[in-house]
Amino acid sequence: MASTSNYASTPNVGGAVITAALGGTRATPTGASTLITTGVSGSIVTRAIIQNVQPVASGAPSANVARFYLHNGSTYFLVKEFGFTATDPAAGTASEPFEVPFNDLVVPTGWTLQAGISVRASDVDDTCITVLAGNF
Image 1: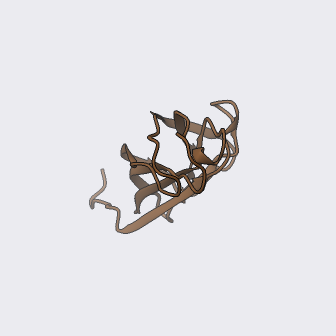
Image 2 (image 1 turned 90 degrees about the vertical axis):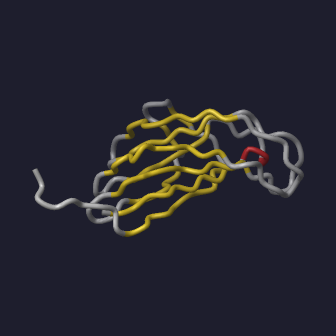
Image 3 (image 1 turned 45 degrees about the vertical axis):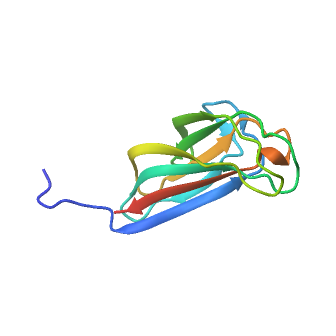
């Protein structure tokens, strides 16, 4: 047992705008975007915020699934899937954000947290994912 506690001491905020649907399979995705890279002693992820962005087009975005993976450089590990329906905001604005709790997911040193979406029918499905984490 450790004699001292180790707490996240440095914020680690990252994200990506996802403009293509995942390819491959759920177990071996292609096209996943890196959201965060861990600190030198690992990181802890508390939540992600998902928002459909409607840059210029009009119409409702597709119902979608965001998939979150841990990646060690060679293998993907599916850690969370989050299904969401999209509202139809005015053109040029963003939908209401969806918050995805991670219940303090610990990510080892040298790994990344990556994500992708299952559907992209057009630019109305472009999705912004922001991750809030901390480095140990």
